[in-house]
Image (cartoon, rainbow, N blue to C red):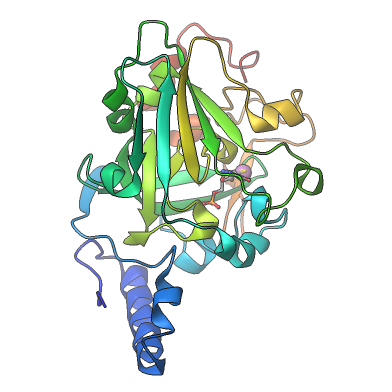
Length: 308
Ligand SMILES: Nc1nc2c(c(=O)[nH]1)N[C@H]1C(S)=C(S)[C@@H](COP(=O)(O)O)O[C@H]1N2
Ligand SMILES: [Mo]
């Protein structure tokens, strides 16, 4: 067993967390080697060689138990506490992701190949959900552009579409969830190539827990949370703007771009403020979730009310 963790973590919360989990795992180990592999399947495997990125906000990080216990993952339930339990059914190994469409060299990579594409970085990002809550998470991964460059997009490629895994035996049906499956998302090519767009394989020093989108997800920190698609199996370069799940389900409420914007209200509620999970008072929402210095130029000349 690889404990204790880790060189990647000075923060006090973080050390307390690893201490508690060390005790838990030692107890689990004592309870018998047969139990342990199950406990470690799909989540909780320490990631080695993670380097700290300079992409980190100073905000206090949201505790691990909140990040992994309050989730949107409609395939495994429409309430926030269900994915932590029900996503344990997600089979994360073997896992492959295929990259196709308007490309010179389509490829299918397994998870080991993905993990070897670039050094893993820890990036502490703000994450804003359209429903008004936000969290701060030490994600692990590398820029999405790294994997996109593997296949040589053609000159026709203008957008990138993403698709989540779907297995009707272990996940909700579309009717129960109220949205169509498989979950799909998309970015314009320049958004997808922006260094802040993260291909994410872990959080808090470890591989992604299933409920957070194991084994591979996007994190697009300047957009509302639903753009950060989980458990990705397919990436497709396209000439036309691809459909996206929440836009298909309620086009008047969720646009393709969905940049965090306190000035543009959701038709049924204001987007001006947010509640950081764990805090009592609401705080003002920042345009582009605070990443405007880095991403605003992507949208020069665009009316962000129209392209919301
Ligand atoms: N496949 C899939 N991806 C998804 C979702 C989902 O229901 N299914 N929910 C989205 C929403 S609305 C949010 S806020 C984030 C939540 O990520 P987290 O649970 O890691 O905080 O995942 C996004 N990605
Ligand atoms: Mo969300």
